[in-house]
Length: 197
Image (cartoon, rainbow, N blue to C red; front, side):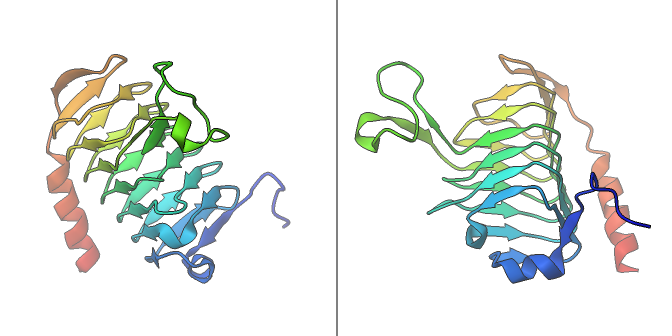
């Protein structure tokens, strides 16, 4: 039976290891229709899935570190010019945008990549998403942000500052909603124990 032309498929770790990634673990799948720039600056752990139409830019001095058991859903955009790290068991829902560098929108400077740096002012800084954090669909994360362990961010939220561990956030402007359960840590241990046996 022939494969449908609509089923683009995934590259797997054997193919990905030939492309020059800084590191590729086992059981890694990246959709064939993703855009990835700066492959030598990208490290990927094991059991990672990157779905269709994602764009990852880790050019020049930028870098992207993806831990293990990480899922990046379709249509995500990661501008990793100043560094992005997604730690183990974290995840991005559809359409999440993460910027480690962005223009100044105040009107005091020119903007966009066609303008020399002398006429622009860039906000930049590493973005770190810690273990067990999940970012909802359509969220935007701005530069120089650390998202604590176990954070949940609701869909369509704007994140422009550090987030406290094990909390649920939502909205624009972003609001702290409530504490998040740590029960998943028990499930994680059961899962890891089962993998070892």
